[in-house]
Image (cartoon, rainbow, N blue to C red; front, top):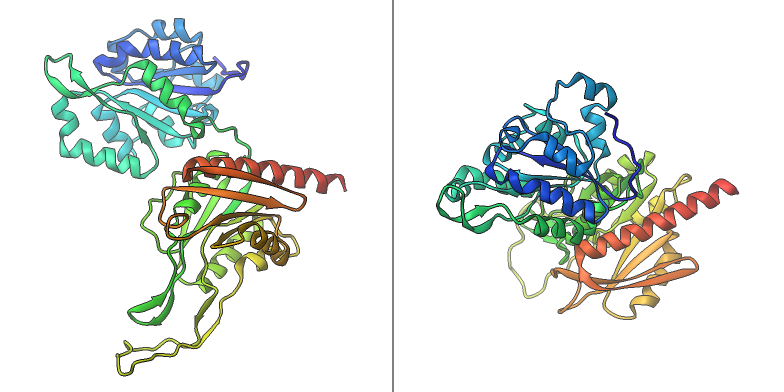
Length: 411
């Protein structure tokens, strides 16, 4: 049975695995449908032992998929096409067995294959005995999945079907549905589908000697949030990252660099086919003219460092004959708007996002606020968490990028 796009709602693939909590999953389908979602249910072989596929078909108005080797279903829509169809994948309940298979990249049935093949955000609502949930192996799998960008919802504490009490109950369907729709990222339209985006993030380090370097306070959190938001919007993202203690966003290809020169080379090695360049990194403006091969000893009251300019990656990309849509960042301590507009013109870029930095704002914080400018316009984004702010920014970038391409095609 082919899956169509007749619904105006978001396309949610609900995976159901073999736990007693599966009896709650039809109610989750109803909750999602009430919010306008188009729900396709995929059941594991064990799940069928708890709830009949006919039940899910009745509440979803779709034929349920249960078998990777279903010739009739595969003829209408292959499992790969189904993986691409989904805007978000939610597995509820997610058993310990499923979490272990997913964490270890095993594709033994239709549901695990879909979860590995999809580029959509994936969420899991675990449900299992409290001792199983507490087991070191399950917790290791949970941590591994979270580090890969999978969001874990719950579990909740309370009475369990086995008669025990503790952490392991699946969240209630209403809470799961609310969690999905509370996160705009889960249902982000694919505004940048098919666009290669090169994004820089984090600080750079410029060596003084083998143990010392010049750097800045950038944590990389904003750049990584922008990379994740761009990927969620459908872009093919290459993240060129300075040294940070952050996990790579799901679906993003990461290139690690240390110096401004290395970042320049990595960006220009990837920019050829890119339609979008977002320079979030806090790149060093200067580096020591020479690097001591040995640790510099404290032999006098003063030490003089001769500094030279680092290559300007942002300006160099904007100056390319076939430059991508180029977005810069400006971290300022004063006159934020004026300095940002000056940089917009001086660098020859398409858009700039500026924020104030200092002891109580900007670097090392979980929140941020941005003033965004382009030629002929601007907008202010109020203080919010960096992931939320990144989604707002990426939506604006996609809008301006599309308008620029439309104008170029018409000229």
